[in-house]
Length: 250
View (tube, rainbow, N blue to C red):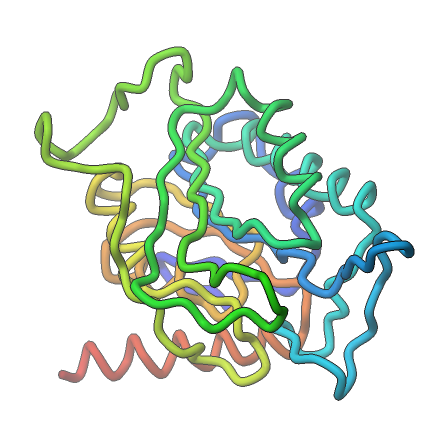
């Protein structure tokens, strides 16, 4: 799918990013798979749970159950490329059993590149599926790059003292069947309103349901994005065409 503002491809994220020189993009806004189906059992340790009737999955046919070491390598490689091709990275991820050790090791690995951590408060949490488990109402927005030694953003659009690092934006039902881990349009709009300039170049290597594309379309930013899963890619393109056409008509 290609328009004046959007260049969206059905391909691997690493192959996409490899095509671009250092700091080609102004911003990266993305959310990778969370490794939701890697489970843990006392006495057994981590094990990969296949998609089936025993539990729900957020990603349809995608198993989302890499061994912890492989998941950490996958996220680290993606982060390395995002930091190479983009000035500022907004990386949305939720801490769950299947990624917790990898996530916190990665936070340490990228400490020197970490600009800020924002908390996305979804306003409501689904009840935990396990006994003794707290409901998870928030997700991390890891912000990396842009002279990370200081917490001051060089291109900020907000006035001093007006923007908190707790973002209360309600999560909404997924716009694409079979993909339950999408972030709301309001979250991307919030990032663009506070940290982008007109005509910025944005990249999203895990497009999912196409939310970043819709936000960039209306903010007049140039987005390059990809989605590896063919079904999600097709559904995202259909959603983008439907929602942008509808809002333009209204």
